[in-house]
Image (cartoon, rainbow, N blue to C red; front, side, top):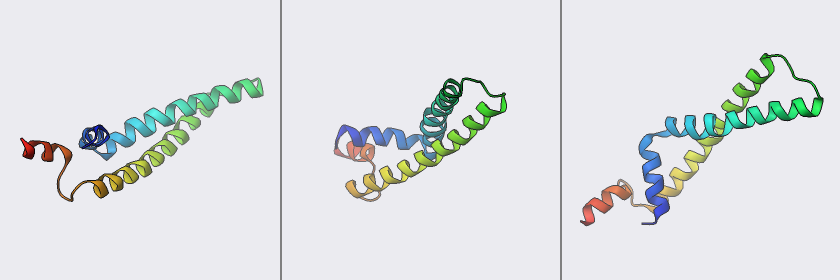
Amino acid sequence: MTSDHAGWERTRAKGVWFYVLVFGALGWGLPFGVMTYVMSGIYEKQWADFRTPLIYLIVFSIAGAIQSYIVWRHREKQYHQQCAPGFSVIQKEKNSR
């Protein structure tokens, strides 16, 4: 098996909701929310009230969660196409010893 399979095996062992939260909402949504707020403040030459960054963070976190869930499903489909059904990479390594 390739190291990509082993890496995905470790990631998928943590679960879909961990992946969606860490890689989607926190890893994608928060940085883009902050970046959008900063860029809009620079472009408009004024800073909005406290609700605007909160709205950006919520909207981009939700978008990041949706995007990462779609990526999760795609990677799972690839994983199952390349591995025998019912066996994980870790199980195959244990069985080969």
